[in-house]
Length: 328
Ligand code: UDP
Image (cartoon, rainbow, N blue to C red; front, top):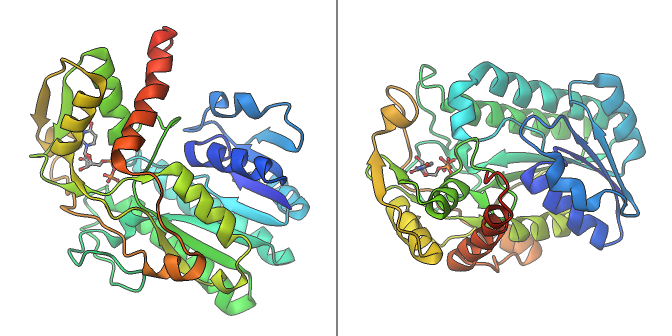
């Protein structure tokens, strides 16, 4: 198949591109390099079947042309990372909402299958873990900028499902749960690459809040494997799926594991949320996916667990540190 990946030079996009090429597909990556990086696709350049275009999803005529050429579209281009979202809320809302509008509008003309990248963040402050796809979403006040991300992604989901309902435009909505792995940058606040970088540099490891908040981290390879299977699962069309891992860890526990895995002398420090992000910042205490639906659809079971994920990220970042390159 000919596959278009918006955000193809991003963290998840570049792993997906690699896997698709390995399975014999042709890949067209579109990326404006805002949070993605050319480094992520350097090793793919020149591979047969790999094409990339540096431009934005706001470029209507380009997106129309690229969708015309593709059989399937993975729409991964988005503003991500809590730090970025809190600092640049206008950019977040515009990128996430308008980008998806453009992609769906053009895909609908030719009825090309579109994957919409959503997020576990849409469950918001809900405490009903594990989160099921049909559960209520619980957002905070609009004065708390963090929730702009969840709302923008929820709107993307509504729009995709509306296209499916009104015009049978095929869509599949994916809710990614804290996806991590090599190539993810800590620049936009993501905790695993941030802690690994801090540990390797001997800097304080910065736990925000009291560190009792829990997350369940998913290896990027597990996410990519699920996407490849869903791409050829017709019954998935029109559906919303969680994709994640149910193994939980507290953020303090994560800091301790990363410190041990790197043999670092870094001190673990706690920083209040309003200092780390902004006044009145709200975090969620737990976030765990219910994986029943995706398991029933494609037999999904996550293969890579937290300690191994940490090892792989450490190995990658050590590579950067040893080569005296910038550790991101
Ligand atoms: N976090 C932290 N220190 C950091 C970055 C993040 O303690 O340097 C915390 C953050 O407050 C949250 C968790 O780690 O409770 C996961 O943060 P991330 O931004 O990776 O993803 P989120 O789950 O918030 O979308």
